[in-house]
Length: 432
Image 1 (cartoon, helix red, strand yellow):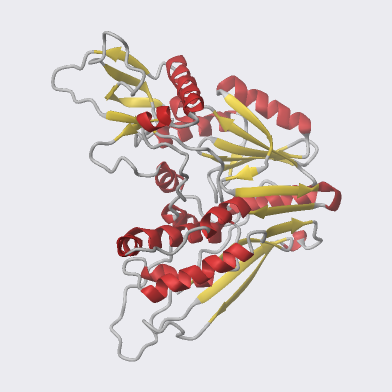
Image 2: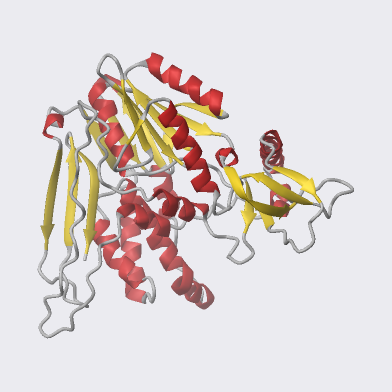
């Protein structure tokens, strides 16, 4: 994608962080599988308790961060074959493919009239831009797990779609100028700039403008937006069943019993936006979906993602050790947080402990992280399993427990919970 570069900020800032901040997706289960149009309220997460240590000064009580906010700290695992600059892309073994992808991106930009080429007006400043290369996958969230429960319980069709150049569908309200992208400067007009007429990746306005446009479209199609997850839309059909759409930036899942209604929705989307049909959902942001319809089962795992994570080895030189203390520890712990949020309710307590020392990790802390990695490496095939269960009518069932001042540093208690729907885990946490 072509991404606007803010000269006031680190140009390596992940767009994932921006989308998490915008969406504010919470882990309250959305009522996307009810038997009527009304949504059931769920309780807010438990508040942190006062310290029980004797004569300790009263500390500030803050609401714990939601799980989806933790995703912002999950730094992506480096992929060596993904270039970081235009020059690297052209010298990459897959340079021809990267060039083709850039050509397609530029075609979309011109097709959507994203900018017009002008001379920079006096007193105006042009912002920079850069190419951002990535092998795109999908997205995580508790709403997805709830949807998978419904898919297996009611034998729904589950499809995945992608909106091509989604951010180009948002309208700009400001006057913004940008330098021409590397490799695509117009001959004879190299010093001219792009006056943006539509939103572009990286602009602070992009995500919001795109979401507003999509939200208006879905409401125009008489879909109801969930009160608990604004990325979930649903519509009750005449026969009493539902059709669901989950949107996360430019990716979406559609689920319904009716193939006719799915086709109709896809047609409506294609008329409004340029869509790419990815067929049955197979992989979502490092999470593999495997469906066994013969036995009414769906599994969600992160085998490939965890294989990359588990190959992170200890540093071998003093220089690498210094680097590890500053970067690698937080990177690996962040990645562990990500898989903990997505598919592994068996590691939150361990990850919660090692994450407390990200600001100043020691040798023992790194050893603990390696133990977790060793466990992960031996259990890469472990994931979530959703299957038909007659307890769906009982709704969400929760389990909670805590220790008593078990933290050695601050004498605080650790609380843990897991919520299930039809026997499948949909939300979990372990925290001080």
